[in-house]
Structure formats: structure tokens, C-alpha cells
Amino acid sequence: EGGWKADGWDNDGHYKADIDYVRSAVVKLIEDSERELIPKFLRLGFHDCVGGCDGCVDLTNPDNKGLLEPIDAIAELVDHFGASHSRADLWALATLVSADMAVTHSRPVGLKFPMRYIGRKDCDGADKRGVGGPKVDMPSNHLTTHELYAYFDKYFGFDTDETITIMGVHSVGVLTRENSGFGNKGKEDGWVFEAESYVLDNRYYPMFDKKWEMELVHTDGLPSRYQWYHEEDGKEERPLMTNADMALVRDLSDHMHVDKDGNEGAVDCVFANEAEKGKGESSEGYRIRGLQYNQPKKQVACPVATEAMDKILEYKMDNTKWLYDFEKVLEKMVKNGY
Image (cartoon, rainbow, N blue to C red; front, side, top):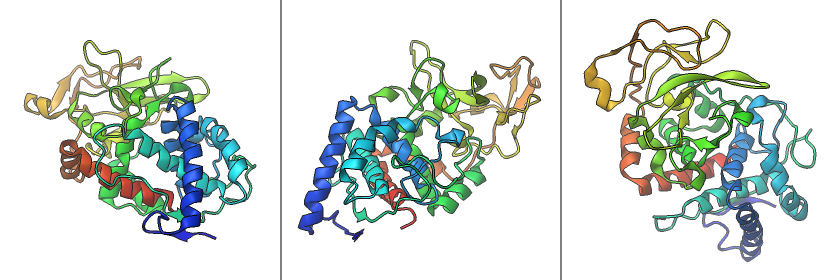
């Protein structure tokens, strides 16, 4: 029996005790991993809930590479609690617990990430771990601004503001080249500095004020990837973003193409931040790192995507506002399809 409780089951003694018990088991699992499962469970939750949370992930899809680790990590709990909770419910709970544990400072009053809905159904066609099931279209890493909003509307029912809000989860994520094809070789850098602290806050949004350049990277067994990188003197970390991240602030629809070698995501404009806008709208000698040939000598600045600017400014200035909004959007995500 499932359903919705606005207070997070606080008025239902049976479910309250049961969910608290399961939640404590997930907390211990994350603590035993030294918090390394936090971004992995958040990623698993997103990938599972594309098109509806059903406790299944198709690992033949290269976009799901690396998800076997969190699937295997929670498999014992799935077996243990399987008589009373679906795998999809437990994955959703792990997602919510991970977000909760990632808020390590400046926690707003009342922020809890409670499990308010129970009753998700596991898909057919997967093994008992959740590997298999229906094929689902994951978002391209090269979405343009319009495509980004259209994707989240179609698969999650998110409006523009909710899409901007959910993207901020990248503050707690890391990129590994072997899993996604994106990232710095041999390292686990993320979208922000100090990504491996696994802290959930609004640090993602000020990153768009920094200087970003593009490069082409290669990984065995995965397509070559175009990615944006930011470097600062004296810092070993090298934050990265994809074109889909940049779509929040730059309209790449007329500037993204497939290069001469068939690699998707090449961009023929330059990222100009606020400090550089007064220097003109072109760049001499612009060159994408990783290519064996130069781009045209004169390049325009990538056009600004205006839809997100006010919301990004709001979130940059107010971490509490973003966390409250994120709690609501994450809850909507893990209830997708129900």
C-alpha cells in the first residue's frame, strides 16, 4: 500500500517508524563509503526517474556507464527491504538521503528532504538489482537552450525555473573520464571547486561568471567529447562543464556543429564573461585545445541566453532560496510518473 503524506508520514506511526529505519540504513551505507556514494546516488536517482522512476537502468546505454557502482552498493538493502518496499522506492529514498547529507552548512530551517510518497513500481525486464528494463532517452550533453528546457518539460514536467533549479545539483557532482567521457584524465574534478567535498549549495551558479574555454578529449571505448574547462593560477582543480550546462547562459543553437572528424558538440563562438564584454565581441587566434587545426581567426562571442539570467542571479545571491527550491524540485523528480 502506498500513497502521499504531506508531512512525510509523520502522522502515520507504522510508516514513520518503517521509513526512519530504512533511512538510517541508507545513511550508514553512505557514511561507510566516506560519503562517496552521495553524488553516485543522486546520479542514479536522476537516471532512474527520466520518464518515470521505476527502479531500472539500462546499462547498455553508454550515458548510464558508471551506475553499476551505486546499484550494487544498495543491492543488499533492496534485498533486505524488498518485502515491504520496491526497488524504485529505495533508490528514490537514497537520492533524498544523499541530498540531505550533502547539506553540511548553513542549513535553512525546515529543510529535510523527507520521503513523502511510497508506491513506485519496479519495471519489467530487469534483473533483481535493477539492471535492464526499458530503453530511455537520456539528455544529450550537447543540448541547446531551447532543447534543454524542452527535454526537462517532456520527461519531468519541469518548467524553466525548475530546470534552472535542478541543474544546481552539479555542485555536488564529479566527472570521471572513464564513466562519461568528460572530465580530467586520472582525476575526479567537478563543475565547481572543491567538488569532492560533496557539499550541496549554490556554488554552481557563480561559476558562470568565470572564464571558460573549450577542448576536445578522447577516452577509450567512448566517443570523443567537447567540454568546457576553467583554470585558475595556483589551483590544481579544473572545473568542467558540458554544452548543456552552458545552455543556461549561452545560446549555442547557431554555433554548435559536428567537426570534420564526426565529433559532436564543437562550438564556433567564444565564452565571454561579464568582465570581458567590454573588450569587444570577437577573439583573435581562438583555438580549441585538443584539435590539430585552428578555428577561423576571428570568432564571435556566444550569444547570451536570457531566460535564466534573473534566476541565476537570485540563486548566486541566496543559497537558502536555492536550497528551498531545490528540495521541492528534487521531490518532484523522485515522484516522476506517479
